[in-house]
Picture (cartoon, rainbow, N blue to C red):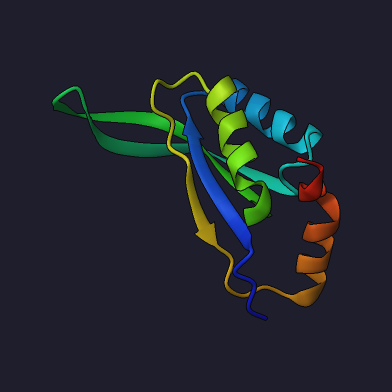
Amino acid sequence: MMSDQYIMVITTTSNKEDAEKITRHLLEKRLAACIQIIDSISSYYWWQDKINCDQEWLCLIKSHQSVYDLLEKTIIEIHPYEVPEIIALPIVSESNNYLKWLGNQLVNPSLF
């Protein structure tokens, strides 16, 4: 099933507590239906003119394009990073039952 309206948003944090804080906040606001936290990933990146390597926690956030702007704003408000990674990828195919469940968990975007 094609579903270009459903998205997976990716963000990273420097510790488990921040990942859990963002997760709980997004779920409580119903801006996400499901979030998986993967720990102990190695992130290599440029920052302040040098290459850095840090251990991070990866958050995989399942949501809908219609609430992306509010989801992004919410992450930025509570994320401790100066420039948090917030990347949205389309979910191009998924089981019908999963997409139905996902959609039923999210806030009605017409409320905003």
